[in-house]
Image (cartoon, rainbow, N blue to C red; front, side, top):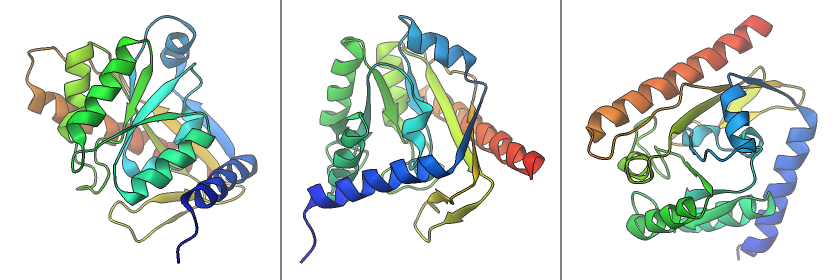
Length: 213
């Protein structure tokens, strides 16, 4: 019998906090984001699913909600991030997507920042699904791409090669150029551009790792 989700989420949140205490975080290109967090400009944070683990520490604003799958794994993620002070809207490209997106849009209208893993919850890896682009077009909020690399890390044998930084690692967060999506613009072109910026941010993060080695 599997342990209750509440216990597993508590352990997961404890693990994330403990890991954070053992690594050094470095943030690059986040000046504009920090200004927005302190001001009135709201935004959409976007990152690949494989970078999820320490992503709560990329955000320093007042309140943010992330789109999370309605699956069992999504329930665990939602409970875990809630323990880290992050709200969630339930839905994804595969399950309950419309309901989840509507929930996020309502929160954005109420002044929340919102977040997506554009290739989640099950991939294909590094492929932008339409939800984040539709949200940006509907709200007018800019999408801020962010990527992570670590000087010491393990990649899991999952569909996305999930990144787990190891203790004593230096973890680099790179924030790319924000992307604006026109309400009646070319959504496919916007998705391709977001992918390019996410890949560029990840390449830069890896460059910081190599430079500090």
